[in-house]
Structures are given as C-alpha cells and as structure tokens.
Image (cartoon, rainbow, N blue to C red; front, side):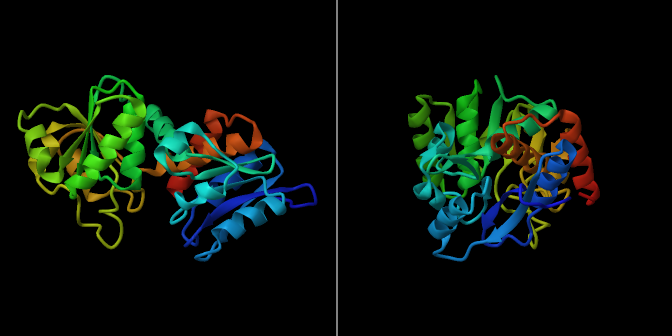
Length: 290
C-alpha cells in the first residue's frame, strides 16, 4: 500500500475499535481493485460523536463505518438517511454527500448477501429470530420486507418483543412479525417438523459466555432447518453446535461482516466488488491472514 497526496481516507468510528477486522477487509479490497484508499479505525470518546462526524467531513474523509455504541445516535448528525436505515433506526455506514454524510444500514444488506451466498432464502419460509435487541430489530425489518410466512420474534422480555413487532408491522403494513416470550419456542417446536430458519441475534455465546446459548433445550433444535448465528467469534458457538448435532447446517456471522463491508465499499467508491475478490477476502479472514 502506497499512501500519497491523492489517497482517500475512510474508516470506522466507535468505542471501542481496537478489536475491529474492518481495516483488513477494506484495505484488501482497495488493494485488489487498485483503488487509492486507506481505511483506519477512529476511537470516538463519549460525547464526541457530533464533533467526530463534523470533523470527518471537514477533513474530506470519503466515508465512515459506525459501530457500537453509536449506530443509533449518529443519525441526528447526518444530512440524510436511507429509508431502510431510517426504518431500522440504526446506521452503520456514512456516505459523503453535499454538506455532510448520508446514513445507510449495510449490516442487513450484508446479512442478505451472506445468506444468499450460503444458498439460503427466507422468501416463503418461517423464521425464528432469537433476541429483540438492536440486531434482532433490524433482522425483523429484513424479514418483514420479504415474503416470509411468519417471523417469530422471541425474547426474554416479552414486552420488548411486542413493542418491536408492533413497530415493524406498522412501519411496513404487515402482520408477519409475531412476538413471543423466549419459552414460546416450545409451542413452535412441538410438532417436531423441521420448519424454521433460526437467526440468533443475541450476544449469548460471545466470550466469556462461550458455553451458553439462548435456548439450551436440545429438543428445540429438531425443528430447525438451518441456523444462522450472527456471532463470528468463537468460530462455532454452542448454538451452532446444537444445530449441527441435530443434523442440519449452521453458519456464523463472518460472511455478514464481510458483505456489510463490501456493500459499504461499493457505496463509497461507486464500484462493484467482484465475487472472486469477496470470496478471497472471506478465505483470508478465515485463515486470519487478511
């Protein structure tokens, strides 16, 4: 990588940012395409988000990704927000426009591309969403946007699941999102049929809770057609192990991480990242070599 006076800068704002794999992805893609761009992480302290967005524009930064805890709060500092991101209420990608930045949500478009690459479609399917936090909310919007039969939103706090389901159904004029308490899985799985695509959206399974999963009952996994855990470290979560032990495929969130980055890169640079480059980036990520 050669940095000169023409090199454009993009990056990540968050707190913390030390763990991020995003520079590895973006800098690999830029190098592969011969695009003169460098991607770096920016630590943004509490109370400095507005100053960071304004400063990035003043410094002619091409675009930014946004990670925790700023995906919601950043919206008020933008000059425009994409309709999907506005509905979801979270932004993870800022694209430079006249006067500031426009916000997008490439987390969900990245998940869509990841699932397609694994041969998974949710059209016409029944989906179980585990967790009604920010990620679960975004996945509920994704499901409601497609022709799913039903998407069951399971959460420990039933009231929170109800609130999010009501919001999503109202925003998209549908009744496809069905809120349930977490133990509602018992009624969904009682037939024993493999009917559901299950998307695990909680942080349960991340270090140090690597030996836990949201639903421990092994009987539940008999109703799963395919499992998707949006965690990518550890490589195999307990949720994934239980899905695989039941005899069906399970995937982690590494491809979602990759494709949300690819979508952001394409927005910033007005280009198309070839599938071969994306595939190579994924293989290198798996090997820890990017």
